[in-house]
Length: 78
Length: 281
Image 1 (cartoon, helix red, strand yellow):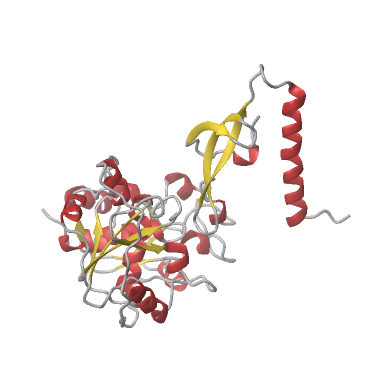
Image 2: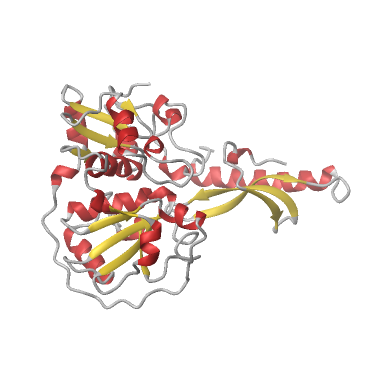
C-alpha cells in the first residue's frame, strides 16, 4: 500500500511502522520549524499475515484522513 | 593559491585540538535541532536554532539588532569573541547565520569547514550536555545593508548589465520542474522557474561531495568565472529561502574575495509568489 501524497519523497530507511506493525519505506518531512518527522511512504503487507480486506481497511482509513484534511482547507460549497 | 580570507575557516581537526574557552565560542546552527544538536553536538557548543532564533517570529525577516544583541548575550558572546559556527545540512544555516553576524558587524567569525557532516564522517565525539553560559552584554553595529539584496534590488537588477544573479538551487528547481523537494512542503512557490537572466550555479558545485568541505580556489574560480560571475560584477545570490545562497555568498565574498556580493534572502519563496514578477523557465 502506498501513500500517494508522499510521492517523490526520498526513502531514507525501511523499517517497521509501529502503528501498523508492518515493514515500511520511510522518508522525512520537515515542518514549519524545520523539524524532521519520519513518515511512511509505502507499506509491505505480508500475504501470510494480511488479506486484501484488511489492507483495504487501512487504505480506507488513509483516504478518510485526507478527505477530512481537504474539508478543513477547501470545503465543498454544499 | 589560498583563499582570499583563509582566516574565516577552521577545519575539524583544528577544532578538536582547540576547544571553546572564555574568548572562543563554538555555536552549532541547525535547521533541525531535534535531529541534530539535541541528539549530539561538539562539546561546549551552544545552539542557534535557525527558525526560532535568527528569524523574526512575526514578520518574515531576520531578527532586529536588539534581538540579535540578546541572542549574542544569551550565547555568551561579546563583540571581541572569536565565534566558530558549524551545523547541519552542509553548513547552509551556519552560513546564513554567518551572514547575519556580518550584517550586524561581528568581526571575529569563522566556519568549521565541512560542518556536522565531516565531524561525523571522522567519528569525532559528540555530547548531549549543554554548556553553562554566562550571559554577556553585547552591543552590535548598525546593519550593513550592503550585504543584503531586497526585492526591489533584484527588480532593478533585471535591467542592469553589471549586476549578475546566481541561482544556487538545483537544476530541477531552476528549470521549474519542481518548486521545492517533497521533504519541504512548506517552502513552495506559486510558480516554478527562475529570475530572468539568472545563472544556475548550484551551491553543491562549491563543495567536495565526499565531506562537504569547500573546493580549492582554482576549482571555485573555474566554477564561477566560466559562467560570467567575475569580481568586477555586482553579484546577487538567491535560492529558495536564502540559506543555500548565503553558503554561495560566503564562497564568493570570503573564499574568492569578490568585493560586491549580496544575499537575496527573500529568494524564490518571495520572487516566485509575488504578483507581477516575471519568471523565466
